[in-house]
Length: 224
Ligand SMILES: Nc1ncnc2c1ncn2[C@@H]1O[C@H](COP(=O)(O)OP(=O)(O)OP(=O)(O)O)[C@@H](O)[C@H]1O
Image (cartoon, rainbow, N blue to C red):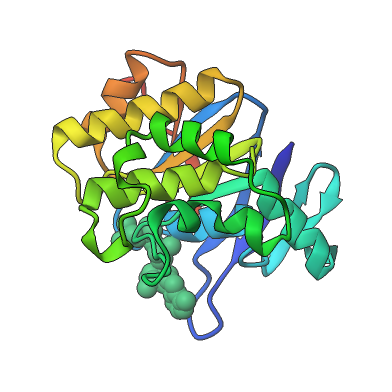
């Protein structure tokens, strides 16, 4: 459904970071994206999210070239692709529940309060629904970001180092949520350098592990 075709990318002020990257994300698939710090994991996710455009090559989403999308088209793509950023940001003056519902409210869509309550329950944040973001712990922020990423019922969830600052127990809770999303049919793509997280996931789901190396993607070995 979302595909990179021979994509090259470099930030304006730097050398080419990615070259000849081709990757197809199929419905219901689970991918990990790994590689050293600075290799371009976040950049790949941002390209899939329509946040960056490739310098060369093409990204197609649902049969359409992402570079040709109008503003409304990009907004529509972002409702189909949920993104959990590495360091999720919230509007600090709004309670958690309103932050989670924001992708719907900014799109002028009705918020189904029962569904919002269920979603907060799913990420185990129902008691914090009225809490203000600055009072949340790191694990609560990551779970809130995941809830916000899936409130538009996307087909695909991108997560950038979602367990980066979490202890092992909280990392496992977050991983279970991602696995549940995948089992419900969503494609999941997780950028991480945590090999233990990848091993724990592979014990439960069939996941492909891709490594960025030399600006390209390679299938990681079976040793993981
Ligand atoms: N907005 C930007 N402008 C210029 N250079 C950038 C920008 N964002 C990232 N870079 C550079 O691009 C390279 C890849 O960054 P990216 O964040 O994609 O890597 P990463 O693999 O996700 O790293 P990490 O594991 O440390 O999060 C780095 O050298 C980074 O400094």
